[in-house]
Amino acid sequence: MRFLRTLSVKGRFLSLAALAVCLSVSTAGAQTETILYDFTGGNNGESPVGGLVPDGHGNYFGVTTETSTTFGTVFEFSPASGGGWTLTTIYTFQGGDDGSNPNATLVMDPAGNLYGETSFGGNGKSVYCNGGCGTVFELSPNGRGGWTKTTRYSFQGNPPGSSFLDASYPLGGLVLDKAGNLYGTTLNGGENCSFSSAGCGVVFELSPNSGGGWTETLLHRFYGSAGALPEGGVIFDSAGNLYGTTYEGGPSNSACYYGCGTVFKLAPKSGGGWTASVLHLFNGSNGWGPAAGLVMDSNGNLYGTTTEGGAGGAGVVFELEPSGSTWKEGPFFQFKLTSGDYPSAPLTIDSSGNIYGTTQAGPATGVCPAALGCGVVFKLTQSSGKWLESTVDAFKGQPDGYGPSGSVTIDGQGNIFGVTSQGGKANLGAIYEITP
Figure 1 (cartoon, helix red, strand yellow):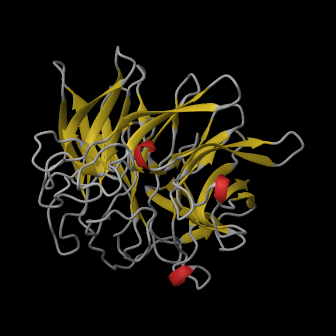
Figure 2 (spheres, rainbow, N blue to C red):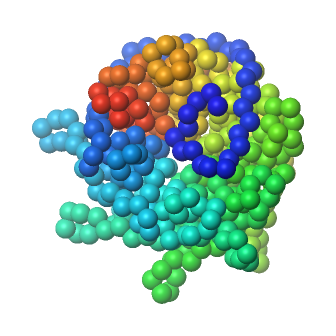
């Protein structure tokens, strides 16, 4: 693999290609990057992942992943009264049944409760889960200035010899509907398939029940040829349909033995249940290996990224446009190593329709490990039916950050906030701000 990803799951086989690219790139001017916080390990955690969630009052919430010294944390990042910022760890995971390795952006409900996932831990004891099958948790303000953590569900995986087929390894984060139900995906679980004895993954729903707990429903099980191994989460449209991506699946070809990945849709049936359909198949030349979820603009167009593929193998940003009862592929941007490499986080669309995102590596330099480059924040603007990229910020390593691992958040003044999983003064990750 050309780049070490944040989470390595045992038993997965990822075929990777090396191809080349071709689109011009400019560097955005008059923008300043500032490291607001350097993670130091210990109680403050290290290696932040995912995006930052604003609460509407100037505060941001995020997670740090499991490392050799911690099972992961949830933190609050707040402006200090005298200037600067303060980071407060509001929960530290204990591993085991409590969960470990939070690995995706949190979601906040209207009451200020936070919901998230741990990729490992919980009470699932399937032999296919090394250290637990993962959990969904809630953090609620307790009225005393602290937070109360509750495990809402522990995934059980696929116990051998059992007819019960549950989910395992949630990676992509959650989405809330208006009724307070949670939806997400898991990398494994569901039906066993040729791709993985642990299952090709599921889309699930968690709903509060009358007993004070939560009930899980598997909305869709992936089987391989029509999609497998969903890493990103799902999103809703205004009609209540769900959309997402699978990292693999679709027809096998010379670039992707297990298929190059898919974009899928789940539509609710009037009598209950969901109808699944494949909207788009990747083939390598148009990208492969979508690891992030999708975003939708005001016109109903879908946008996403693939970690690999395109003319140079460095990944693409793709667009899907509704056309009657089908979807057509719009113009897509292909990365090259001099502009960015391995986009693996959800995109962000600003109020003007511009697209922002991150790549974990590129432009290729000798500053960061394996000469892959330290990663970038990029911006795409559309002109004459083409996407034009500008580099908003190129990370430089220590004491700067490197390896931006999540989506960016843009405030009302156009400031951009995000995290890098590595770099900073202690090389344990950082929180950055980019100002216009």
